[in-house]
Amino acid sequence: MKIGFIGAGRAGTALGIYYKSRGEKISGYYSRDIEDAVKASMLTESLSFSSIEELLQKTNIVMITTNDDEIEKTAEYISKVKQLRSEHFFIHVSGSLTSKALNSLANKGCEVCSMHPMQSIATALQGARTLHDTVFTIESDSEAAIEKAIILVKRLGNSFQVLKAGDKTIYHAGACLLSNYMVTLAESAFSYFRAAGINNEDILKLTEPLIRSTVDNILLNGTDKALTGPIARGDIKTIEKHLEAIKEKIPEEEELYKVMGKKTIKIADRIRNEKGQNPLEIGGIFDEK
Image (cartoon, rainbow, N blue to C red; front, side, top):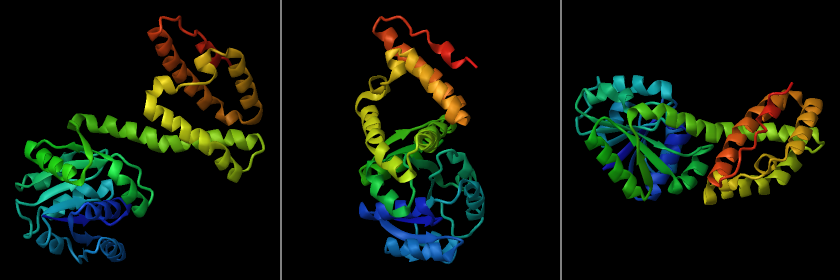
């Protein structure tokens, strides 16, 4: 079985490098930007195709790794070419779209599914290195397609979760919150350190141990046991001082601090309830003007 890629961006190239490292046969890449296809094919020791039709002739499993907006259009184009065979298995890797984006191919008798790697891929080479620990989420209306995808993931040595189509959007929103908004939260926190007179280079050195230890604590112990700080302790005076300093030095960050504080109180109260303790009852501090 040979795997071909339509789309030679970061995700498609990273997946191809990773698949090859796990013993899969890569037929090659097609991209509207031929230079991207050539580069990806060189990294995977495969071919760069000048057309989708050529790729279909030499490929069994077709990975559609284009931008989300192009997936349905690509599927509709493929559904009309004579090189299409019902034996072709089509997979797109979008986290937000369901396999229904490939309905034009399913209507031609092909098995289709979505198979999203729960991973942030900043560059192709970095992504390929991290994919070995990645969980793939699989979704399809077809049990046969799900089984085919599971076989592929197991062959790679990865774990997987099967999702229902109706759960894809909320799943992807969670992934965005965890990955994209973590960057936003870090940038917000960095603004506090800049307000304290620390330059950007030193901020990274200062915060790296804290960021890594926090993530490690979450992964090892879960969010409840990882929670520390003044809200967990019920230290209202410290929170009041924080709010005063924020209003004085970086008032544009006050709203986010309050929103995060209210959410954190809910976590802390849940922990206290499980221990038979009274709730903190300090939420009003974040409502004060």
